[in-house]
Image (cartoon, rainbow, N blue to C red; front, side, top):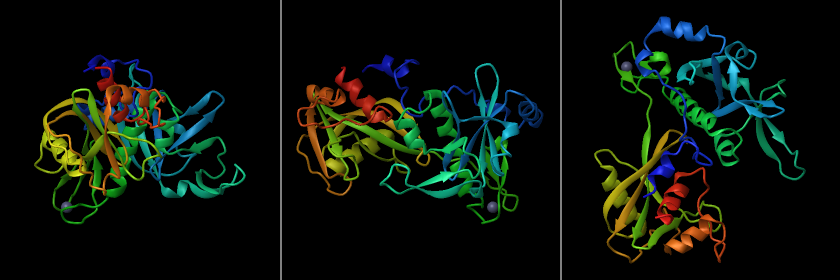
Length: 329
Ligand SMILES: [Zn+2]
């Protein structure tokens, strides 16, 4: 498998959310003096999240998600903050979660016929709220910024949903620079969650298995995927999901690469599975169709030249890169 492709720091798109330049300095998150010194640095920057959506500055040369700390109050009141890490060179990057009231939902019919709901910061025409998926799919920001925003979004989503102790119900407080919540009543500690998802290509010689969910864009086929369950290995989850969704039995499973996926806080674990049976039994629930594709056919889908106009997943998704690595042998 083409491991060099995944490790290359200059691959064309980076894939969405997988490139993150920050040194997380996790061993110093309890060091209040260190944190104070970081906040005082003039080159300290913040990523602002409100209602699960990044706030971006509109500039003549594009969008900028990095705010000096002195500009945050001018956008809205903050509920939470966390130290994401240090950029190469040492400048700290924080994430701030703003109160929901910092933004308003407005009706937008600017394209003439489609009435959409958009979020705005009232009185701040220089700012825009754009959802993470659009930022990644449309390549609106450099891959390293997309990776940092994914980290900020996933962490802030966790804070919004975990204000109270899951053990006793008391209000928890933030600790460790935003990377832990503590309950002063029952002493439980709570850590940000990441939900592992296996995403895999079952292969048999020169053929691979792709499926489509009803919600996929028309004509798109992709790798199968599913959540890992408690007490389950990655390999067993891969075999279970392929059998559940497509009726294919698989033997050996090998790991390829992973991708943080902040919707809301998953980690996609990309694998290749060797199929030992070929007869498909599509479940009709998770998948509406699944098919075997030859290596040449998969390559033509990646190139956008398939004879039936079938499409591969977008390059921001790890599924695209699993398929590409396999087609390239
Ligand atoms: Zn508690």
